[in-house]
Length: 462
Image (tube, rainbow, N blue to C red; front, side):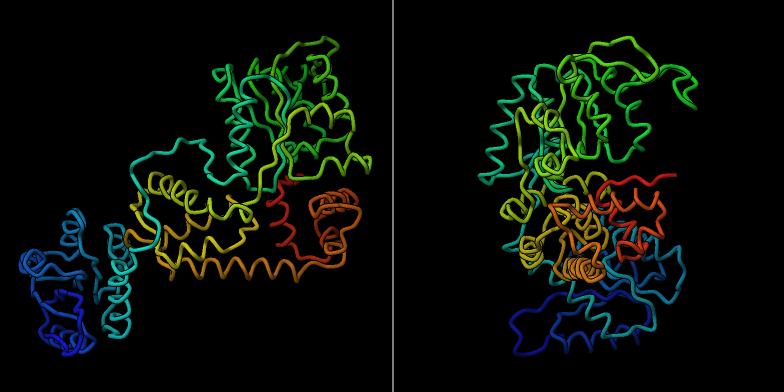
């Protein structure tokens, strides 16, 4: 049945062995402007899929000659299958799980709410309408695991610098906000160099308790301290002639900064509990999201170490300053998502793409990747729609606003160039890592403290 005066008639095939259900849905959906065809069993369904070529199938699970789930599985294995909405009166978990696993677009229980069904059909039809103008996940190029994605002037300059630095062994300081990809830059320098077959070892200096950090870097001898039941090589020893990335270098305590300076000057070190010097040709790359020059002025970072680290510098811009790179980064991330989560996302709707390009991404690429993984999980079909992206970004905005509003004077009154991470670390130390007292001093809740510690890579002390 067709409705007069409508130019477009999206095709919907209804498969149900109950005549009353078929008649009700036929009349209702025809009045909504859909072209309807009906089938009463699995065999007729498969025939009409070929003859009628529907965009959407409303498929009952229980059919007289076949299981709707088996029909679903067979149709989803075909090239360019229609979107399939499963309908059933049996509300068991196993059926729901199988339906979604086999690729159902939606799952609607009986008795059917016709408005819910029509809304689901419209969403399915919108998938084909919204293809134009968005982003297509192409297959012409496969990205490498550690590719750095970008075409902006700032990123092209970084690529040039990586090319220069990969040809020598100077110490490099990489600066940038959390989540901007500083480790990717360090890896690119290493793996494009002459020592790419040597180890690349990354260590997060803020994630290790201060008393153990020296041992992690330089190793220790048996009996050097309580718990040192055997000798252990440190990261500088294990790196050989490769590269060691000291991430969050600003969190290294002053005493250890002195020993690191000695290594950079003399290329040797001593294990904890030993007087024997060990030589290492490991290249050092340091990364930080803090202002080390300001920390030097405040006496919280050694000036001589700063200059030793800052032989060559790379500043990685935040994602909000290179929004034209976002579509490329989205394509890269979605290719990884398709591979890792066995999805087949091949497009992003135009409105969804525009929304993501305009969002400032305070968590940078790491936040974008997290959101895209969630969007892919919520997507039914092969296109990420704005109806999926919009609530995720709105949730992120509310979280940002809540965190900003929740900050007490201790968090908002940063002075003397002290960063939020600096303040949290300082108060934690002042409160001897008592989280309750730290929250009171900062004027924030425990969940906010936990989120902030995770965001800044501050490891919990046990």
